[in-house]
Length: 399
Ligand code: FEO
Image (cartoon, rainbow, N blue to C red):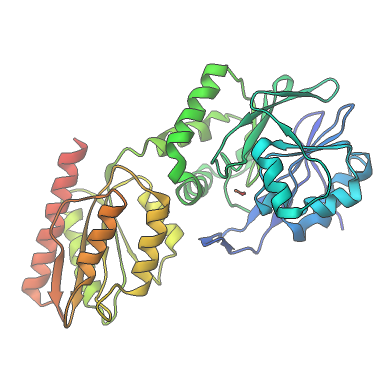
């Protein structure tokens, strides 16, 4: 159907798939779609690096066929067993009948547990090399980035790093290279990916960056498993990762809330104005108008998170509870926070938010702010003052 491969070098081609329509990636809103990147290395042993999500198998095979006959592929390397990269593997094995399949030690187990392949997956060790002919691939384990099985593959002669989920982003495009896409788009989507996929493993990201430095790996091309390939200035995305992994708080606040009869909304707006009165950059995000994954993206570099909920049946409003569960799993660090909300009868919600913030390691810097029923002018002034106080505390914290 006219699918083609894209040349990265004389010996390496992109042969993945573009998913223009996916809008949900296990709870993360992929509003610009994504790509599942697979790569073909031409050598004495023709090698396929990763595959694609199962429904895109034919697209990948069609792209491969523009370079070599799929049945001529000798090796498959699986850098990551998650099904957006391995879903097509059993079907592709049937077509290609590769001589060998390689994965990390954990990857070999994970592929068996997913697909019950009925054939050996050769487990490679951290630091091991695989000769392909003229080129050699080196493997480095990157456990928990993003799964326990994850590894990256590096071809020293090409200075090319197949970085799997790392340095990727969910962005469908007709362009295959980062230098063909506006930098703000790349930075936004890479940040969204980091905030929603890799954030809990930030300490491992920092260790990995340190290891790459210690090993003296020279990288001219970063070829991730999602989104565009970095062939010019690949250290751009590496330096972004260092900043995001360090999670240094900045003069930015995110006010996240939902509302039943607009009272918590009135409070949120007054609080946001108060924070902004201290010269802090504020993002006001009502849940049901903003996806949880977009909220996490804004929280990535925020120093202050303020969450608000009306009390519903002695508890949290459901969207706020959803946000807190999602946020807790992503383990943000180095943030201060506070909670607010309107109520009619009992008013538990703000205190429940504070409990959740503390449980996830956010330092709560103010008593919960509650207003009964509809806030009047005095209440709104109180909200503004409370917000300004939060802004002052943040400024003191990041001095
Ligand atoms: Fe793109 Fe962890 O899978």
